[in-house]
Every structure is written in C-alpha cells, then in structure tokens.
Image 1 (tube, helix red, strand yellow):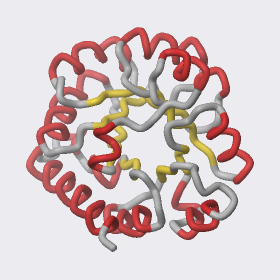
Image 2 (cartoon, rainbow, N blue to C red):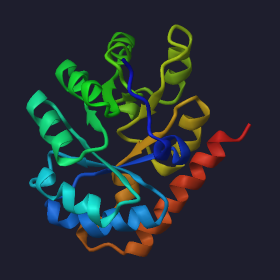
Image 3 (cartoon, rainbow, N blue to C red):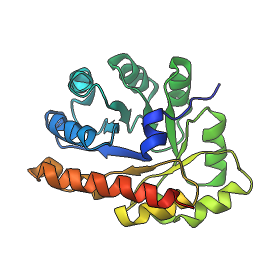
Length: 212
C-alpha cells in the first residue's frame, strides 16, 4: 500500500519545516504561514512539547495540514498520529515509522540520499521521498534518479534556498521542504509581514519552476 501526497502539498509545492526552541512559539508562525498560502506544515520532534500542542494548533489553523517530522521511532510515530498529525516525516528511512503511517493511511515522507535508500523508501509506501540533505547533491540528482526510478516522487530538504526552488521543481520534484530560508527570524521576534513576504516568494518560485 502506498500513501499519497496531500492536495495541499501538490497544489502549493511547499512544505514548511518549523524547528522552534519552544513549542509555545509555534502558533503565530503557523497562522501566518497558513494565511500566506503555505498550508502544509511540519513540526519537528526536536522542539520540546510538539505533540502536546499539536491538537491546539490544528484547532487554531484548521485550513492547514499539520504533520510531525524528525520521527525516528515507532512509538513517536504512533503518538504523533494519535495526536492528529496529518503526515509523518523522517530524516532517514525508518521502516517502523513508514509502517505506522501506511497502516494509519497517513502520508509519510522518509529521508533518503542514495539510489538504494530512495528505492527502499518508495517500496515502504512513501508519498514522496525526501531527498536529504538536498544541498549536497543539487537538482541535477533528480534527473539522474528519474532514469531508473521514473515513478518516484521526490521532495528536496536541507539547504534549499528560496532562489533554488524553481530549479528543483523544474527537475521534477513534487514539492520543496523549507526551513531556515523560509522561517528566517520568525521564532526570534521577526516580523510576521516579512515571513508572509518570504512565503509569497516561495510560492511564486514554485510557479516559475512549473512553467514549461
């Protein structure tokens, strides 16, 4: 059985990755992103208290699809799904995490780098394979993968700058995963309007990459 990317992700082409010093800082950032049109949002388990606030964030931004990332253990995967996570993300291929997601009907995005890892992640039922760390290989890697793996959906993560987005999308990626280049200083008192501007730039960059 295979999970599939959500309509939000395929429409916008952007997954925002929020890694905050404290989960209590999430809500205004989540709301700004959702209001700006980025509605596929990953909250990382490296942020203390992420699962505790997840139901609150889902209620605060019902238009957004909020998932949980940096999922490394089966128990964390189950706890995230039970808390309402709409998708799961891992930095590498974790069989147990993928199995929990597939069983629950929740999209899963395992991280992979080598062709063997990409193939393994796809066979486990990935909605898309997260190419991580993407800056290590560059967009040309996607074209090389498409030869032996023409049906595999990919999403770069790690070191993807806003100006890099069109090249990744044009190479065939279903979406891009953005952390620091999108979030900037949002968790350090940064301007919500500046965050909204970066979100608009990211969405526009996806559209440029999709043009023939």
